[in-house]
Amino acid sequence: MKYIEKKKEPECFSNWKSMANDDWTPTYKTLSGKPKRSVQDALLEEQGSICCYCERRLTLQDSHIEHFNPQSNEEVDPLDFSNMLFSCQNILTKSEPKHCGNLKGDWFDPDNLVSPFVPECEDRFSYMVDGRITPKNSGDEAARQTIERLGLDIPKIRDMRKRVIEVFIDEKITQKEIKKFVQSYLEKDTDKNFNDFHTTIRILSEKNII
Image (cartoon, rainbow, N blue to C red; front, top):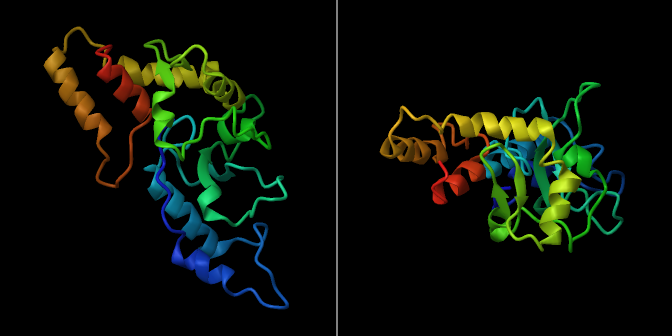
């Protein structure tokens, strides 16, 4: 999980909401077209085009707007941009396991859910070379439940992490070359996007595991 610094909502979205009148009230269900696309683009930019939970690279077609505090909570404003994230898995095949926002669904326990809106979220987890993710501290119940409730350690995500990690484990490459490779990998590309599993690679590198 990577820290996401929230910014102001996009102007197009703000203008759309400001059109509310006695005959029309903006709702999440009616959010579409340019206003919705402006929200999607803003979320992609904030997150560097990686999933808010698992950190795999997002595409607009296979992503969905995630409300961190679910819309099912009557106290939540579904149009509150500060509560919005972009999660993977907009399209699910029959055999595909749910994870991230799709698996989380309406579950929300602020005491047992690690928030990507908090900078320290990145240091609540540990990663292994085989792709596993575990709580950094064994007694961190929130980290444990976050992994379980979001499916961050299911075989699919674990294997995806492992494939990325394996690129950095090559006996033919010197440690100096690996460090240079890691440094380049952790930088945003020319489109200002992060690479898959950014935090995994950063933490394993800092621990000199890769």
